Image (cartoon, rainbow, N blue to C red; front, side, top):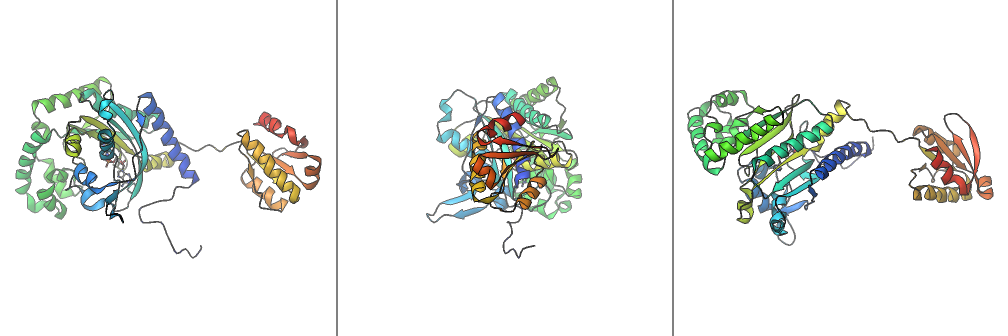
Length: 420
Ligand code: HAM
């Protein structure tokens, strides 16, 4: 191992070619489904103003309190690496006048996000997400549609071992009543809560509902449930969503203690969790209050985002998807100065004709070149030596049968096209 002075930052990873094949697979599935559902592609900057997330995600959330990468620019701007994509999309909606378009506006994205979390399996500091957002309409059917799209992606990727968990956290009004009742219940049992939840009790009591500590879990199991506190409007909205899922024959688990680590949600929230690890693969919900928070305008909206690494890990582990080897591979080998130049020219001609070719033009030894051709499992080798270069004739060798024949330079492209 080289005496490497620098390693990649903790919780971040390099994506090598073989990883890209998997990312590309997820991208292809997501973009095809986005297209079929008339979503338009959007890419927002990696950096945004810190305040966008502080206000959008909520000051008392773990993301804002502990996980954002923020810095001051030389010009004095307070920026941070985006920890999620929904707040930026809502910013775009208002900043680019998307409210003038026919509603709802449907947008999707695919890119890297950053959270300074404790790295562990399936949890990284730089991770990729794909996301879908439907902005500008409140109808319950859109909540079901986002869930359906999320499930469609997993189905298309042949991922099966998951559970859809769903809950409603009402609007700020009914959630307010619920919070009071929850805090009243929890305060009486404060002693039994873990240290973290004791602090949460003051700052963000809903997060206690999904604490993984066994003692907290036990206390929570008897706690008041938000569904009993929903106002008529929120209850009706949620029941219509559940009714639609039943109509679509989508199995779900109603989880009255499901909460999300982001404050902008209203009404429906959901997570599609891997049954084995419990990790959320795709999660989201309705966020009707975010427009008000960011632009003082009403903007009903719903969306979801999926973790690409988490999905890729399942594809790899279960061998659901195995990148195909590109066959047949063609290798162009050369000997001598003139051979080398002609090899470059012929490679170029093949590539102009969209034929992928391998070469090692920087190597002079034919033995070394053929060793490489063998290593990449090339099916054909086009050999151009000094003599061949002068006569403008190459040798084409079938590496499997050992048979070889001569081809005129001007016929190489046509001949190779016939073979592949
Ligand atoms: P989120 O649940 O924070 O929601 O993240 C969405 C997905 O990103 C998760 O379900 C998970 O698969 C993946 N993910 C999150 N954090 C990490 C991490 N540290 N490492 C690896 N994967 C991770 C949101 O971000 C919302 N913006 C989703 C949304 C869109 N809600 C409405 N529209």
